[in-house]
View (cartoon, rainbow, N blue to C red):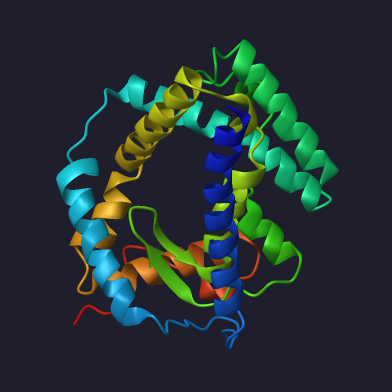
Length: 247
């Protein structure tokens, strides 16, 4: 049994390291200048974007959860992401953020009934949102080229690598097993539906009301991400309802 368990783990590790190596190799190219959009994979990205838009129109856009259920699902999904945020806060030497995220996770996982409710927010304990992509940025890594990932959506080479590493370092991946892991996956999916409803107007504007939804999605993601990481000048602020490709 032990040999079987090890043999099952090895392919996952091999795939993880292969993805990391591929992204590291890709990040070795010309980095974008500040404020620049670097998209050497545009042809492939547009094909993936067409697929993602179709998935959104056929599934996520049509999915519907009652308002309170959608909010509860989003709350619970965000709560499941807090342990990984704690790890990244420590990697960024942000001790205060690590303590805040830990306290928020404990409060919402207990009093908030596994994160369905947000008593921590009512107490003023707000999330310090972060991920391994942000950790890499703190360590001085450039964002690399823009990429659009199947199902997951817009990203950069740095953030794509961050997504992989977040799966590896997330403490919940080592503690949740069997039915618990399946429930957690279901909660995250429901949370995504809840977020789609919450930001539906903005998403619809970008995907369905713009002259070039791919270019609009790319611009919106890069500007939002750079602003989140403190890498966008005030004059570069972006209005998602302003379509620069509209004639």
